[in-house]
Length: 95
Image 1 (cartoon, rainbow, N blue to C red):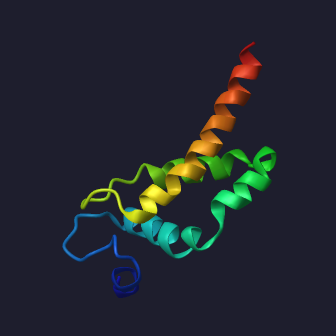
Image 2 (image 1 turned 30 degrees about the vertical axis):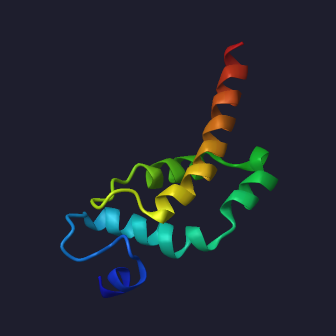
Image 3 (image 1 turned 180 degrees about the vertical axis):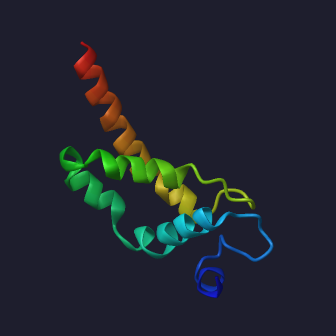
C-alpha cells in the first residue's frame, strides 16, 4: 500500500477505494501513463485488439473519490480514439 500512496498522488490514505481500484489506478499511473499511449494508438490504430479497448474503458470508468486526476484526463484522448474506431467498425458492420 505504501508504494501506491507514495507513487500515485490519486491514492491517498483515508479514501474509500477498493483493492481492485487501487491496483487499477496504480497500473494506470505507474505503467500506462509512462508510455506514449496516444502515439502508439495513433500509429497502430487498426491493430488494436478488443482487450486493449476494454482495458482503457475499465481504467476510464474508475471513480476517484477526490474527483478526476491529471492521469484521468490524460487517458481521455486514447479512450476517445479507440471508442471512435469501435463505433466506426460497428457502424460499418450494420450498413
